[in-house]
Structure formats: structure tokens, C-alpha cells
Length: 127
Length: 127
DNA sequence: CAGGGTACTTTCCTATAGGAAACCACTATA
DNA sequence: TATAGTGGTTTCCTATAGGAAAGTACCCTG
Image (cartoon, rainbow over all chains, first blue to last red; front, side):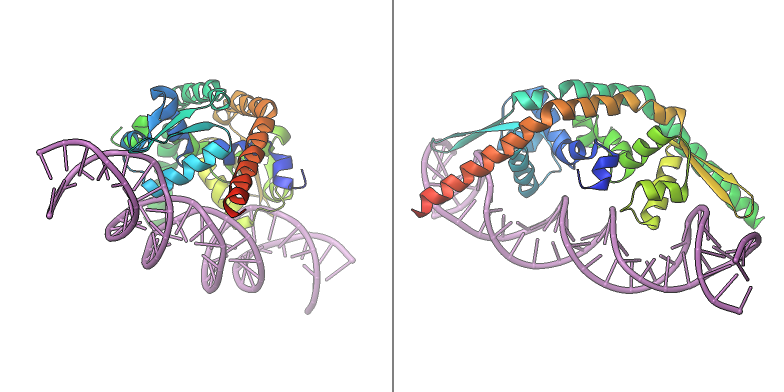
């Protein structure tokens, strides 16, 4: 509570936790496909590198959002799945996708309007 | 839709929009204090630099989440307020703070457990 | 005439995240 | 014998975000 930013905005800690780069895609995939092995996950996230995938999975495991199961077979097999705690995020994700469906077009329109206005200003300044 | 990551996770565009660094604190402050001037905003976000504040405000304005009103007085006066579109995020923010209140302690506990397990492993490997 | 307030902009610097590519030990398969 | 597949690790490199500090143009106040 000593951090004034967190004092001003209680959402911040959740952002670091859930909405940092690659964490939501990983959770999303695990939430929709069940337990997956490392390479299966990689196939679902085609542009992620193994290094970063490992990093994010470790972080998610440490935060209790993902469960890692190591099978000491030959060859070794590792499975990742979303935890019960991770599953409590599902309604949040739904709320976000709903907002997205409802309001992203408006954002897009706002951007176009803003850019058009700026262009007009520039043309006016020149002509 | 050509980006495979966005295909895998419809939440991603919203993250770029709303949950990138400083944007939620700014929206949060504007949502709770109404229209504010540049320096007032700065006072509410004590650690933000003017450069970054300007950058984020421009971005939020472009995305239609914040309205900037310029008063051509002397000295000039500028006011920022959350837009109607920005206000549609309020229930989302509430959902996130609710989740935070309910589940952040579990995350914290998971971290401690993970760290403790790692320490134990190391001690076992050494002794 | 110095100093302060407004809303920024500009310059410079640095820390870090993240990507590319190679590597690792092991085994089954061809 | 060579190749592929397992789940990563290691090294190196770079782009960019973001911070610090100073500057800007204008005016008012003392």
C-alpha cells in the first residue's frame, strides 16, 4: 500500500499477474483445450519462442494459475493445465471478450476520426 | 484475423488498448475524480513523468476513451475526462477489483508455497 | 525584472523484455 | 548411422519503453 500508484489503482497488481505479454494467450489456450504438453502449447501459439514459453509457464505455475505435471517416463512427458484458481479468471475473460465485441468497433472508429482530423489540420496548416 | 495470436486469444487487442502500462491508473483516476487538468492528473499519479503522461493521454484520446478539452484562454487550460466509451469499462474494472479482492491472497499463498518448495529442493540437493 | 504557473516537448540515457539460433541428453525409428 | 521428437536451457543481440532533466512560449504577480 506504500506505492502511490497501486493506491490510486487497485487493478495494477492484476495486470502484472494476468495481463502481461503472453500470459492471457497461454491461459486462454489452456482454458479451451484442457491439459496440453509443451510442444502442443507451442503449436497453438505459433509465434512464441520456447524460452519465453518456459518463462511464462514458470511464472503462471508460481502464481498458482497453472499446474505442471511431470511424468518421469522415457521420454519424459510434461503436461500443463489451468488450475482451479486460474479457472476463476474465466468470467473475467468472458467480460473482456464481451466488451471487445461490443466496443472495439467504436475504438476503431475513434482512431480513424482522430487520424482524419489530424490529417485535415496538417493540410490546413500547409495549404 | 491473420495474426495467429489474436486468433488464439480475442483478449489481446483489449490488453493493448486498456491494460498497457499507465493506462488503467489514468482511466481509474479520471473515473473517480471527474474532469481534471494536466497538473492535477500528475498530482494524482505522483510517479508518472510529464512526457509519459502526455503520451498515454494522446493514445487514450485517439482511442476515444478520454476526451481532451482545450480552452484557448490565457494561460491556456486543458481538461481531461473519461468519455462515454471509456465509462463502458467501469463494470470491467469492478470485475477485476472484485477478482483481486477474492483471489489475490490465493496467488500470494501459491507464490510462497512455490518458493518454499524450491528452497527445500535446493537444501536437499546440497545436504 | 525575477520567479512561478500552464501544458507540454525535446534530448539523452538505460534497463529490460523478448527474439533468434544453437545446444542438451535421451530414445525410438528408419 | 542418421534423423526426429521430448522439454527445455543458454547465449547473444536488439528494439523499445520509459525515466531524468532541461527547455519552451506565454503571461501574471510581486
